[in-house]
Amino acid sequence: MAIEAESDVAGLTDRNADIVRQLKEEEHRLQEAQSQLDEFKAIAGQALEAVTAIQADPENEEHLESWKNLAPEITVDELKAQIIAETTRLEFVVASNPNAINEHRRRQADVDRLSRKVAETEEKLEDVGSSIAEIREQWEPQLDTLIAEISEAFSHNFEQIGCAGQVGVHKDDDFDLWQIQIKVKFRENEDLQILDSHRQSGGERSVSTIFFLMSLQSLAQAPFRVVDEINQGMDPRNERLVHERMVEIACKEHTSQYFLITPKLLTGLRYDKRMKVLCIASGAWMPENYKKLDVSKILGIKRSLVAAG
Image 1: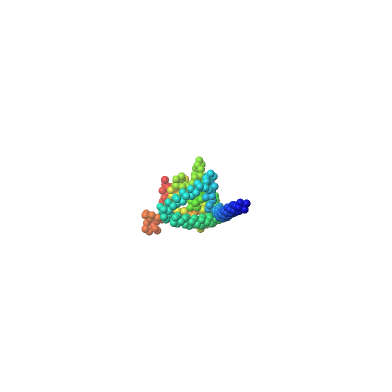
Image 2 (image 1 turned 60 degrees about the vertical axis):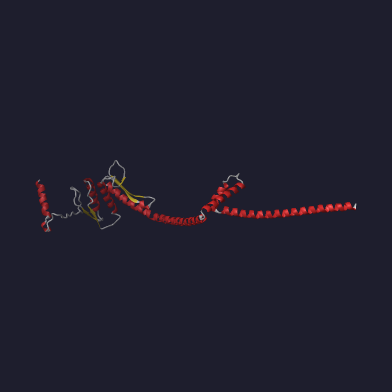
């Protein structure tokens, strides 16, 4: 009995030792698992912080959209394979061109520098645009008012000869292309047309020019004005029209004195009592002694010849 009891005790002792050993092994495994769990939690926390930082950076929006558009069935192993492939490609680039990274960094620095310069230029451009808009708000209404006054006088001059005309401003986004635009109509069956060297005759352009200058006289005060050979190149009809209008304007009260210089005039023109005609004798046929030239006597001879028929 004693021997059997001792044998049972020994067996139980060995079994208990095995259980204790297994228990210690399980406890060790538990500690290792707990350590791994803590390590994984730390890694997960760091990854979460990194992801949060990436999502908060506006520069990563484009990449985030690309990640969102990845096929949902793609696996981690496939992603790892893609990473390995891209890494290999990068290593190949570096191997074929050792300065690739330095060159990339240099170009990136140039891009950053130029981006800052573009931003500064855009800011300056915005400031200049604001200044232009502010100045334009001040002078453009004044310009429109001035041109309207000129156009009113110009139109009135044309109405007096049975024609039509107006003056306006051609406005463009480019201020260099702004211009005074004169439109005229000399015939009833046509519309107002821009005054240029193609649409109107030389005489019509001369009429338009002198009428435009006349329209400016109320805006530019001067004691006298000189008109030199304005009738040259005009046909008789237009010359009479311009002369009639010029006499009407020049002979008004409280206006500038006009000097009309011309080598010739048509007969039968209108003259006002406020006008004075001065004939200047000049040329190769003038006598050296000007006192020998009696203009009154010459005119008397001319009248006698005309009267004698």
